[in-house]
Image (cartoon, rainbow, N blue to C red; front, side, top):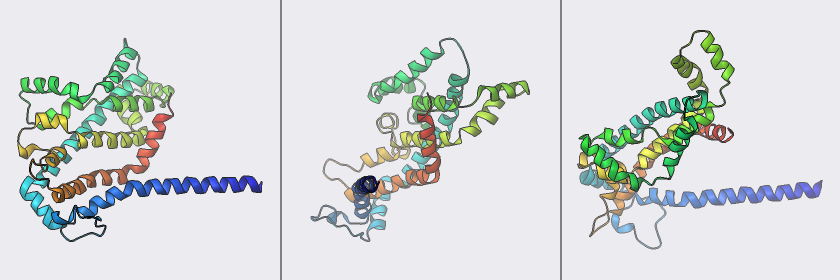
Length: 278
């Protein structure tokens, strides 16, 4: 028994040591980015690198705002990501409920066709989507960024897997009590899926927040730019504005950090719940 306890203690120590080491390794670049955002341009590339925060953050932000109007860029990204996340949550949850609880012709082929779209690289879709948006006269609009991706295949799959856990007897009881199909979905299915919806909200928000190539093609004017496109504008042929890039990158991660901190418990439980379904 003592030998087994000693082995367990050693393995526990090694596990904790490995986890702590990995956390430190992953946090170092983030910490350096935060420090770099407070340094003037001339101190950015000095060696050895400076690890103590400076006092130039506000000056760097003022230069960034003058060059890019980054406040508007953040507002654009937040608006697009929030609207897209809400719309996609509705569509994905409805589709997931239909695939999990209804029987209809070609159900399985349709579902697996939707999943098959995950293997299509975004580079393959950009030109057809751009031509479609041009025909609809939607170029340089937010709806052209939001609508084509609203029915997210990952979201449909995740919601289908979680909706399977709802007992069919519960739904039948609601039907016998006179509930409509929409009432069953809204009052019974959705309240039981709060953790899964929170997990999906983070995934969808992050997807839209980081989208770069497609908005780069669709958006034409600087007042419509999102954060990834705005960051790309800070890399010139003759000079790279590292100080402004670090300020922009620091501000860009704030919404994601806040969202994750608010929904972290639901995110973990929602992901685990989805992984346990057949």
